[in-house]
Picture 1 (cartoon, one colour):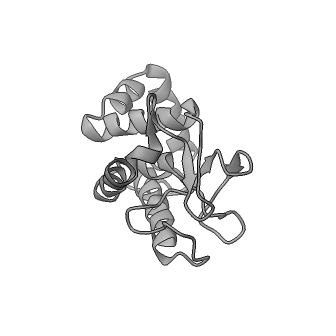
Picture 2 (cartoon, rainbow, N blue to C red):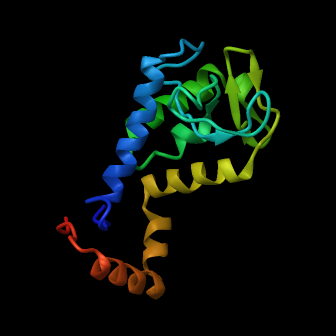
Picture 3 (cartoon, rainbow, N blue to C red):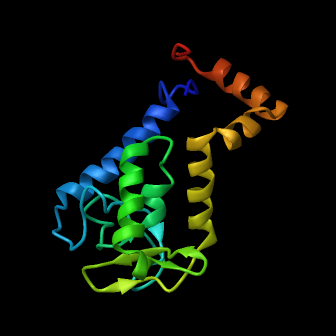
Length: 166
């Protein structure tokens, strides 16, 4: 929670805000895509109806594709919002979105498309971030590496205006 540098006073809060922006965009749904809402959000790079794409909460990169990892990999930052999305994806749409290997990569209700793929690079962050939300285990193990502590000290000393530690 206390990590910062010259670009942000808190990486944790920055990540939280980015997730909340993603969700708020899907609630506002400016392009009026089917299926978007408070429990159906997560615009990020994933498989798409035409090909893998960099879907984002903006007018240029939003085609109606919701990526499960976009909402579920933010559990530590938006636990209530991510849990609501998880319940929606599993309880309401599980028959379509869940298979033998877990959640499919993405879906686009506007065009009636569900990814046939289980993409590890998108599934892995879901697992890791749920564990980080639950116990912090991955973060704790990562931060215990001496190389990371050395790097963080160098970054902090390189920061011309370091933010106060929380």
